[in-house]
Length: 129
Image (cartoon, rainbow, N blue to C red; front, top):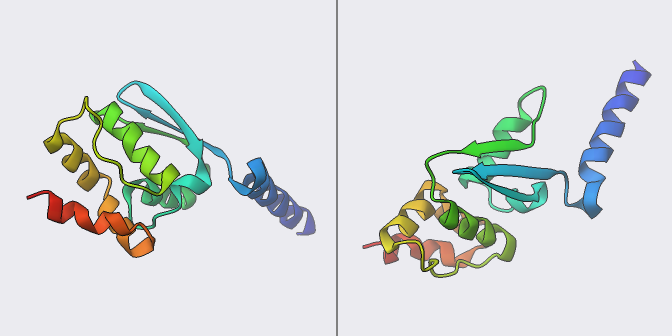
C-alpha cells in the first residue's frame, strides 16, 4: 500500500514540479501546425475550451498531453493561444477575417475568461454585432 502511495506522489511531483511549476508540455496540432505550451498556461481560464479539454483529460487514466484540432484556422488559433500566454486579447491577425476571428473567439469560449480575470473577454459579444 505504501509503495503504491509513494508511486502516486512521485508521479504528481514530477508532473507539477516540471519546468518550475509550469507543468508538463502540452502539444496541440491545429490544422497540421504544431503548437507547444505549458499546462499551467492552458489552465488559466476555467470554462474556456482549452481549459476544459485538459480537465476532461484529467479524468482519464492515461494522459497523452497531445490534442488535435482539425478544421480550425491555425493562424487564429496561434492568436488564441497568445491570449492565454499574455492575458490580453489582441485585435485579429491580418490573415484572419473579422468574421472568422469572432467565430474562433466564440468557439474557444474566450468570453468565459471574463469571470476569471480577463476583463476584455466581456467585450467579445458586444463587438460582434
